[in-house]
Image (cartoon, rainbow, N blue to C red):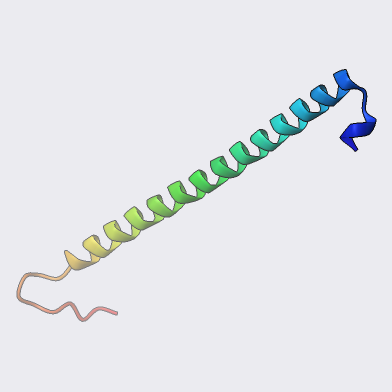
Length: 66
């Protein structure tokens, strides 16, 4: 395919394809990082909820609320 393209156009085509690949990789990395940020926030929120629930019971007593 690239062999049928003239010399000047071939390098432009290759450059454009490489930029497209890099752009796609950057986008995928950004999506993965955003997903990790969301998971981290959910984990922190879960820990806060667990700590808040643990602090409801008075020391030495069992919290029987369901």
